[in-house]
Amino acid sequence: MLLVDRATATDHPPLSTLLAAGDPDAVAAYRQSAASLGLIVPDDPDVLRDVLHADTAHLHRLWRGR
Image (tube, rainbow, N blue to C red; front, side):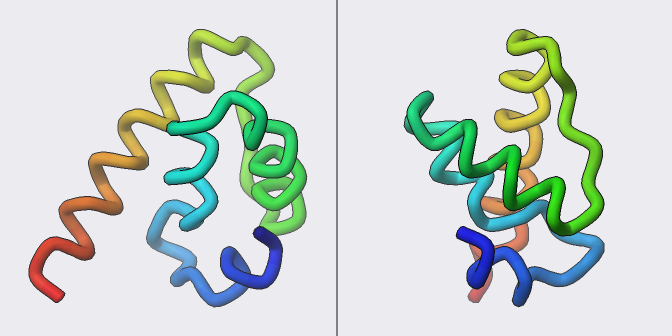
């Protein structure tokens, strides 16, 4: 995930968001990748779920027209 996320523009959510939102087992790797990018990841699982869903929607909007 780290390699993919490094290429993500700073004003976009990390692409690993898509994995973490769809697979609870990927959340730990997402946390690590996001931390390496200097992003703040909520500790509360419910808040994190909301962030992942919002960021997933943002990524879908960004990539829809490409």
